[in-house]
Image (cartoon, rainbow over all chains, first blue to last red; front, side):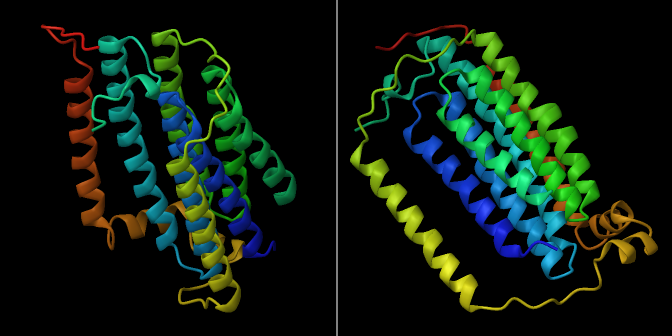
Length: 100
Length: 172
């Protein structure tokens, strides 16, 4: 069996990709996709940890994370549509009304 | 098997973040999720793998695709490569945090507390799905019910937010 360290390294790479996307991309949709990437990295850690300690609780937790991710995607995309309808763009550099 | 999946997952993740066309990014995200499902299956988490394909690749990414097509988003212009200082600080902090977690994991030795989760033991006990269902409807019943309320709230919120506004005020 592959050592758990390899799964953790893979999850770290995925999470850092997601972090880079959230921090440096200017497209709101890309930012939401990067958040999905980060959630998937966490799911991978949960499943491999569940296999490591022989306990199914980690896999149950993955289902709750998927539920929350679906809710987050639904509400986030609704916000993207509302923003696009009002301002005609999904670029974050144009959406700075809350900046002090 | 794992190394091939890991290699492809890394490539897909990088392509999701670096591609300038949102449609192509979404397709790479689908590839990413399918490969992750393969990794879950190799970890004997069969039900998680199935749900990953059905819900993530089948529902969430399709929702993304719908929105991309609805807004008719083309490729972005050339991204200006000026890297803002606060974002860079956050990135460095994230990397430092991961290094701290890594050193802790290398020094600590996690120990098992549950039963046998090998493929043979799972098959003898009725399969992964049966065991997941038993846990989900006994130990995790309340979180399960609360998550259904969360989904209901998210549906209402999505409808209210995306509803067409009667009086549209365009700010600068």
